[in-house]
Image (cartoon, rainbow, N blue to C red; front, top):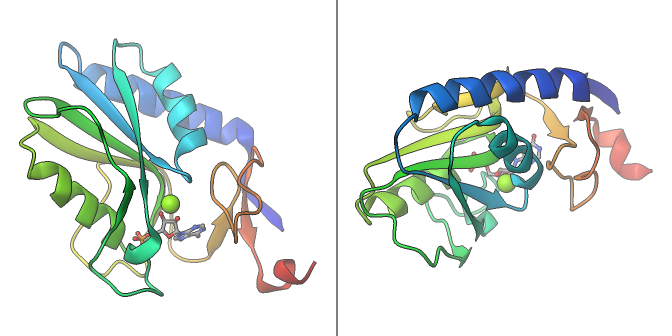
Length: 174
Ligand code: IMP
Ligand code: MG
């Protein structure tokens, strides 16, 4: 596997994002919703770089929204147990690929009348985007390729690596 974004670069970007988010949400009731499992590492670094009082919740989505599964559906395996009406919600996830899962989850949240919903992903992968959606904040943009590390997995492997790698098909035969 080849390193695409080393941990040092990731740290630098996360700090930049944290500053931007802190300035844009100043004085607002900010609720970060981290998506498990992929978003766990990014969310944990990001919330520590946002110098504001905020709250964090976790949800787990099924992979129904993935491009190799039936589209347009997202199953929530573990939902929020707090009200979000009137609050400013920031969804934090590892990657936006086709966009299906985050479109569906955002719609699900919007039905509960939050003051705003924005999306922050570590990676914005653009080439398979099916719908008109973009993350409001992203760490790095790539056009294509499968990436692992820093929360991102291949069949549950590689999530805990501190750098982000480009995964080649040959890597799965190891
Ligand atoms: P979506 O296609 O934007 O709905 O993304 C669905 C999910 O696919 C993401 O949350 C990731 O878990 C996974 N995924 C998409 N691209 C990659 C990748 O390059 N590496 C690891 N997981 C990915
Ligand atoms: Mg994911």
